[in-house]
Amino acid sequence: MKPLNVGLIGYGFMGRTHSNAYRRVPNFFNLEYTPVLKVVCGRDAEKTKEFAKQWGYESTETDWRKVIDRKDVDVIDICTPNNSHKEIAIAAAKAGKAILCEKPLAMNAEEGREMVAAVEAAKVPNMVWYNYRRVPAVTLAKQLIDQGKLGRIFHYRAQFLQDWTISKDLPQGGTALWRLDVAAAGSGVTGDLLAHCIDTAIWLNGSMDSVAAITETFVKERKHNLTGKVEKVGIDDACTFFGRFKNGSLANFESTRYARGHKALYTFEINGEHASIRWDLHDLHRLQYFDHRDEGILRGWRSIHVTDPDHPYMKHWWVPGLQIGYEHTFVHQVADFIESYQSGKPAHPTFKDALETQIICDTVLKAAKTGCMEQVPAV
Ligand SMILES: NC(=O)c1ccc[n+]([C@@H]2O[C@H](COP(=O)([O-])OP(=O)(O)OC[C@H]3O[C@@H](n4cnc5c(N)ncnc54)[C@H](O)[C@@H]3O)[C@@H](O)[C@H]2O)c1
Image (cartoon, rainbow, N blue to C red; front, side, top):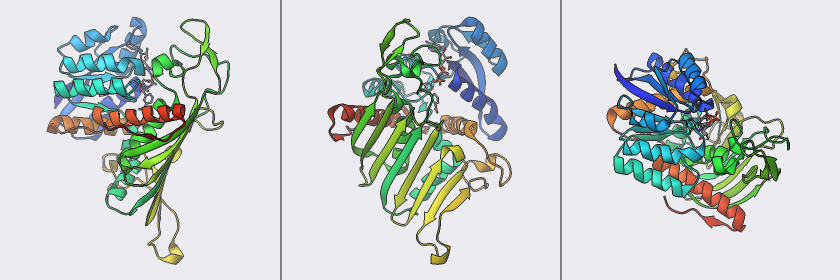
């Protein structure tokens, strides 16, 4: 097998999920290339070395620019907070590296456009880690919709609910809490959580036309870990938006980090002319399906256990009935990326696909400020 040398930048939560995926993929997928964990980059030399030892990276760096300069690296994997994606990605594109970037693509659409221009000018393979597309049940939903099983779509509703920032004593900024700091995150739940819902939605149901939104920041000031001072909180703690897709269906989305009892409750439901589907991240291996065309006395919601070999991705894993989980979505994404790397075809979502999500996020935040229905600009 040919080596695909990976340079990982940032070794936090996503650094771990991606490293696991690179290690697992050659065991379960037959691919021409096999990922080689060439170098991991973090700012703390000792901690980076510890990570490298635990996950099997050959070497470490403390400056991401050195990773990009290395001739023995083919792919730059960006797993750092959102405010560094643009600079790293543009430098990587200029160096001719393939780029895998964590979501959201950027801090805002303006940055996203620059990133898309850079990868397109350099003609380098690029992909964004909207991994929920690769949950087999979600991929199955895509297949059912594309086969026309739902008919005309009327409604798409999604929620992403968490409860980890309710305490007013939680600081903002720095390690682990950069998501509360608008300067590092760009936005709150809109860019962090709704971006996932939007990516899945436009993949399943097409582009969006217009949105109206309301956001709230429940805790207005928090101590900042980097300055030690109490500072204004600039992120949206909660966001609810509705709108219209270009196919005429209605959108209804909600996200919050203040839904006591919910940790990562990502759900969506799509209602079509003939059938509806529903999915829930807490039960990710199942797809709920209702078909009005079923015989009357048998009509009802089916709970499809997505574990058969003819279900998406499942032939690569165990035997029917045995389910897989969250980490496998990243393995699938690496496998799909390598296939596209081999064939020269784009691996979706590309930077350009992710720019569309970024534009919708920006439009949602704009609509929350203006209080008006806002048109979603073209990509
Ligand atoms: N696809 C998903 O479902 C998903 C889930 C979580 C996070 N994310 C995204 O992944 C990215 C990282 O999030 P995370 O949860 O892994 O964060 P994290 O805080 O766990 O890890 C971030 C890492 O980046 C490092 N870092 C920061 N600045 C750096 C720099 N200049 N050079 C090198 N390393 C640097 C930090 O030290 C840390 O190791 C974010 O963009 C986030 O939105 C995506």
